[in-house]
View 1 (cartoon, rainbow, N blue to C red):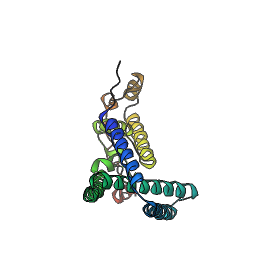
View 2 (tube, helix red, strand yellow; view 1 turned 180 degrees about the horizontal axis):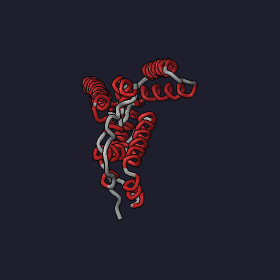
View 3 (cartoon, one colour; view 1 turned 45 degrees about the vertical axis):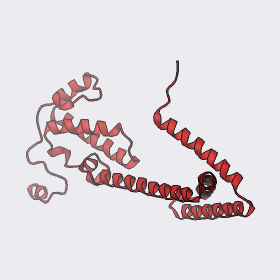
Length: 228
């Protein structure tokens, strides 16, 4: 039975094969001084990458060596590919290829940074506990139906990739949600647990009651006044 590789994988291997052929052609076309220039460029790129890795928080010798090796190898590969393009298609095509590669890299980075900014700024990200301080309104004042929706939203959030701090914040909010549901209706909450709740099960369907009148956020001045 034939195995069909996904299109991105096919494109990746095709690109690597073409790049390898061009690199070999470039290596054969270069002379002694030009090869020395490629080596010098690789050393400079490796030193720069190692210095950047060293300045990062938590940078250590292994990360510096990995960054230097990656930058050096990438520089050699890029220069050999450009030399191969120049040898096979001319210098003008090589310059055009370099410009397209640089612009494409910049466009990808801008798109990724823009997407990351939208995720951080989205209200859903704050509500799902990306930061503990932005976990949303107090569980105690939410209607029971919204507690059920909160449980479903956080269930979906945990299914995706999360930073450890965000995951811990979501888990804490889920625990608070369950505690509040049980406090409002222990019998109904017990029925929900007895069903063996699966993904997508709304506990609010089994729970009666709502938030107690007068319950406010901790630290609310009005709550302190009432208590006094």
